[in-house]
Image (cartoon, rainbow, N blue to C red):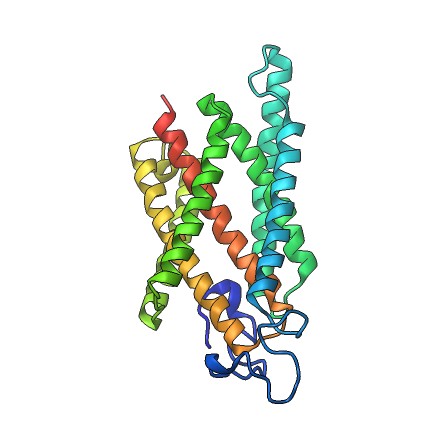
Length: 279
């Protein structure tokens, strides 16, 4: 079960090098030796339940971190200029710090052969700081704090809709589809990094591809579609991992992969809403 997803590619279990034996799905509930089945909790194998449990932990910590950050920043539109400037400085510091540290932790988790629950949790907490600060800035820009709830709802609906489509329409992830999505993902990362550099140097005005304008809207819409494709890849990898009976610790890697994709999806949906509601 070779994986081209960078989150799962370093895992021996997800790539069929960990000694796990892939069985006929129709036999998973039958254990001729009397030991726990692959779908039973406590069997030492990754199951859908363990993935849901670990994902709930990472997302819960992320949301908690984001909420604490939101309240620590204060009011960005305070009538007191001094307080408002201080709050804005704090928001941008948290956003930049969270983004940079979160990126480093994401790279470490993505390329680490043996998954580390502590590092996955650290990523969730740091990324929560970024999400809280970024959301605060966007809500202040639009003037509607409710936009954050709407973005969260949009993310949940996108996730649920993608999962439902994957399950009920029996979407099959072919090697070609996987390659195309991964190539598109790496290309997007390269283009956005270049866009960020050119924006910092003043070559691009108004953020270039990431500006809050029509071009930025089109780019974010395209990235939402790409993020949904990555969700499909995540579901496929998890389903195959459960089928192969890989160790339960890999549930943390699966949770990390889902968290990364959901954070990306949330950011793009929030940007879309902000552009549509901005002046």
